[in-house]
Length: 136
Image (cartoon, rainbow, N blue to C red):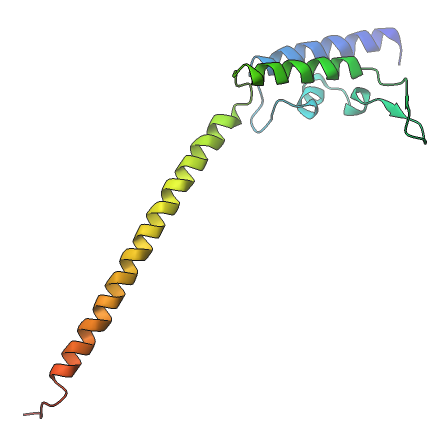
């Protein structure tokens, strides 16, 4: 990769990084390296250090420094309580709604069980009343 391509890709990555950190994410995306690479139009392989067969790192990751910067900034914003993932509030709302619906279903199940027991008892009492009755 020549210096001009690398500089152009770095500029695209920085622009995408700022967009993500502002919370301007495409639908279904989250604040991660995959989204960063997609928005910048580069492959994710440039974010990760190359490894030798023995597991030691070797130079070769063009954008590893940007990946580390992005990850640190995302983590700092999350620790500060700023939400940059628009799905997080939706998850919380859905969890709350799920708990409410689970409770409602449990209450209805208990009510149905009581009514079923009442019906069984009523039918058996009515049957017992007419058990000895001779048809007219």
